[in-house]
Amino acid sequence: MIGARRTVRTMIAGATFAMLAAFASPQTGSAFAASEVRVVVNGTAITSGDIAKRQAFLRLQHQKADAKAAEEQLIEQTLKQQEISRVRMSVSKDDVNASFARFASGNKLTTDQMTQILERAGVGVDHFKAFIAVQMSWPRLVNARYGSSNRMSNSDLVARMMENKQKPETTEYILQQMIFVVPANKKGIVGKRKSEAEASRAKYPGCDQAKVFAATMLDVSVRDLGRVLAPELPAEWKPLVEQAKGNTTATRVTDRGVEYIAICSQRQVSDDQAAEMVFRQEDLDKAKAGKNAPPENPNAQKYMEELRKKAQIMRP
Image 1 (tube, rainbow, N blue to C red):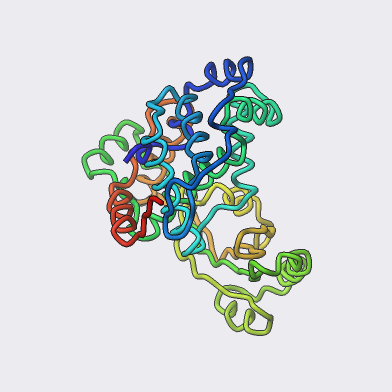
Image 2 (image 1 turned 90 degrees about the horizontal axis):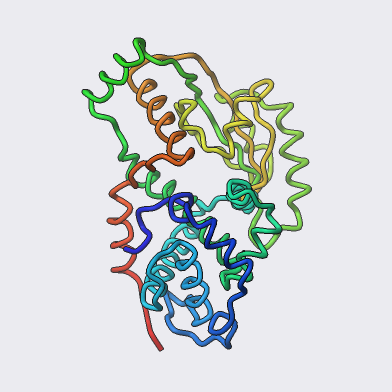
C-alpha cells in the first residue's frame, strides 16, 4: 500500500524546500472548500477535505498526489488508527509533539514556523500530527503481535563482532509497569492520579510484591515487561529508566493514565542477543542521521490485509 513501508522521517525527508515554497505561496482551492463524505471506514468518515489535505501532504513529499492515492492512504491510516485505539497502544500526545518539534528543528524551523508552513500548504498541523501518531504507534503494535522481524543472521552477527573485535555490552533490565488507570471520560482526575502514583513510588515494595501492593489501591494494574535490553527501551521511557534513582522511574501521563516503570534488576550483559540489539540500535541511529532506514516488519502488510478483510468500507 502507498506509504506503508516508510517511517515518519523517510516519508518527509527532502520535503524542506517544498515546505519553504509553500510558506511563500499559500495554497487555495479544494483544501478549503466545503467537505463532503467520500468514504466511511467502519463508521469513520473520510471527507473531501481530508483527501485534499493528504494530497497537499503528498505534494510536499514530491509524491503522486491524485485523489485516489490520497484516499487509499487515508483508508489505511484510519484502519491503523482504529486498531491502535482498540488495543490501546497509541503513543501519547507528548510523544507526537516531541516528534513534531524534532522534525521542525531538523528543518531549521521553529514549531510555529512549521505550523504556518503546513497551514499555508493546505495540510494543517492536526493532519500532520495524526499521521505522525500512526507512524509512531503502528510498528509497536505490529511488533507486539508478531515480534520483531529484524533479526540478524548468524553470519551477519559474527561479521559485525569481528569488525568490532569484541562482543558489545549493554544493560539488561527486568521491568514492571505500574499503571494508575484514568478512564477516557475522567481526564479531570489526572492530577489526583499523578499524586497517588508519585506517593506510591516511595512505598513500592519490589517486583515480587507489586501485585499485592497494587491491590491495596484503586484501579492500579501491573504489567510484567520481563527482560528488556537497553537498546529496546521505548524512546519515551529510555531516559527515565536510565536516569532512575532507586527502583522506580519518574511518572508519565499516557493515554492509559499515569504510569511509572519499576526496575526489578539490572546488569551488564554481552550475549549474542545483546550484541544483536546493540548493532541494530547503531543501524537505527544511522537511519535517523539520514542513512537508509531499516525495513518495516513484513508482518505489517499481513496485519493490514486482515484489517481490510474485516473492515466495512463504504463510498456514499
